[in-house]
Length: 275
Image (tube, rainbow, N blue to C red; front, side):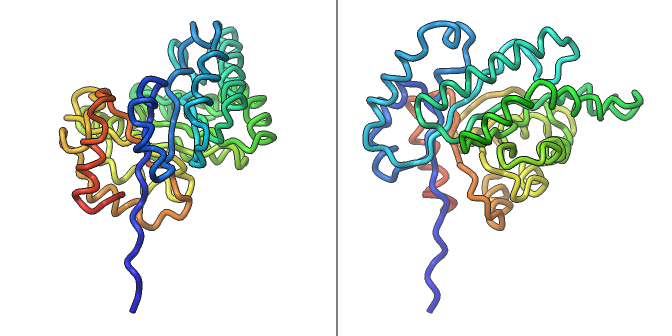
């Protein structure tokens, strides 16, 4: 008689206050956790270490997989402006400083691809290769440092309309420190508003390059960050697409209503998709 297949374990993306609110739920199963306090420029340029110390105090005894959402406001990682890419390099290194301080093994960064790119990269000669070149320029030192830290950078879809582009970009680094993430709400926006494929196609395209998923629901009109069950994402199809993936991606609830996060988890648990 075969044993029942174990279900994936849900985690959460939370700032310090949210961690305090849901600490017992995180700790009871040693759920994956993503810290959301460190993507602000004013935090990274200020006394971020005091926040990191407070986080470490709350995580005393924590043995789960810890990640950090890296900086992203105000820039594109593949900016054509070399001065902006210098800022990118600075922010990415600051993000790794945080990861080192708190003991994180994963940092989320944002895709450079826009909806405009989808319609124009192949029209403008060499444009696709130039995005990859600029990404390597902006992230080369960060990737090398991440390798020494045993940390993985996961590239999250934002406007991405072609789910394969980001996977090819991650592969171009030829490094165990670069993999991909899927944000389900972003993918659903792209599907409903710009003609991208459904959310589960993003998982199929990623395969074992997928190391991280932001679970959030939406109506496909905006980046809602609703709890699963409040929008129109087809969750059974997504989890079916995740089943054959052996890289054990972190499944992180990233919802706007931090107080009500558990109701989103309960929805997926109630569907028999996760624990």
